[in-house]
Length: 287
Image 1: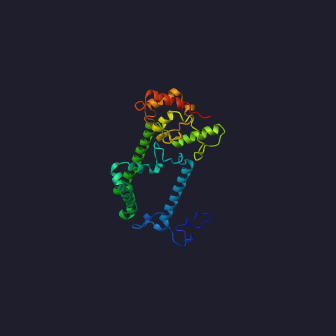
Image 2 (image 1 turned 90 degrees about the horizontal axis):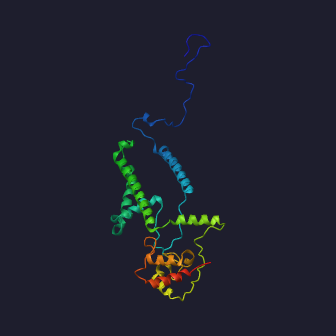
């Protein structure tokens, strides 16, 4: 307001009536201005949840594109040394199903019962926890269950991954996706096309198939190396003469390899039979 009659005097308006009130519903900046009231679920709260969900989904898709799932070889039912592993977000459930009280005769409890209780509780949480308090430390039951679930998932995931690494080390294995990456890298360096595991290479012929050592092979080795020596649970013996000498083959047959993956035959075969088998296998070369 003005004091006096000077034209250059500053005028201060109190409660300026020249600003028109806008029409329609006006969302207040803070719902605490209205005691006992809360934000409308539709559309205010639901719209914010959708926006957060979209941001999380986009972030997850970017992560998936940047770090694609590891790709192993095609499934081989004869490969008994393969260690199955689910994706990382199922590791906790994979480890959980290894425990005896949720597997074997209790498998329905582990696969349907307990997961059904957990997901059912999650769906019923809005109806069971109807308190108006939203600060997590003022909601001890809901907060405790959430922290317990997160801790259990993290623990089971870590245990499952450690067990997988231990089994790889124990069996002397390299994960299949690492082998495929190495094969692709070597092919690229040599200027060759990327190896295609679905395209089987022609099987080479067995050298001297009438040799008496073939009888030993059929009696002792075809379970792992196949009748045509093309491999199965064990590596192919065709071309083994290119990789190992006669002495190395005899040592492998006698004492085994890879912590029992290749068993020792020193108690099953005589020294003459092992030498005969090593000589014949050293002839199995490929060009």
